[in-house]
Image (cartoon, rainbow, N blue to C red; front, side, top):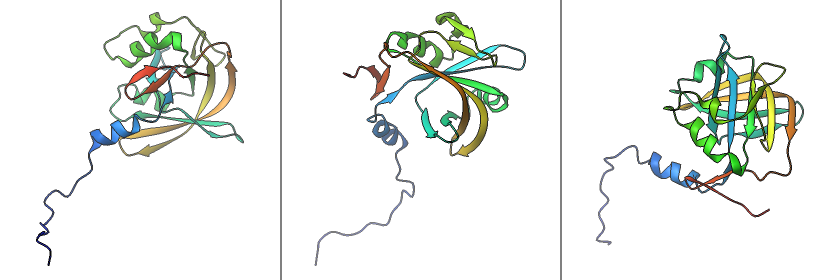
Length: 172
């Protein structure tokens, strides 16, 4: 008989959230700044890397936002938002939009208002203007589904890539 003795489990939750986050970081992602406006007209934006396509027919995209974000209610209640997929030359702006201490984030970028009234950041590799189509709770995040009403691309720019906690480059 084996000398090993099975000890009763004392830690019911063995899942390590930090290790899970680090493992997810091994998947390289693009980086985007999602933008909208408050009902009073103030521009709001934040950096995301949770952006993904969802459907071609109808044209749908998705992204998520942590439920304790101060911007959550703005995005829950807006009619439109824009996904601005940033280029390698815009990583400093992405860091600024990710920093809650930066008050005037839109001073970091050149931008115009689109037809729907949402800020569109200049010189992004791709921009998707979306109707705020659906929202779903997903654990500690809210999943936003946008119906794309317009999009544009700039093929000469290289996309920003985030991998293992930092910006990196890919050879195309």
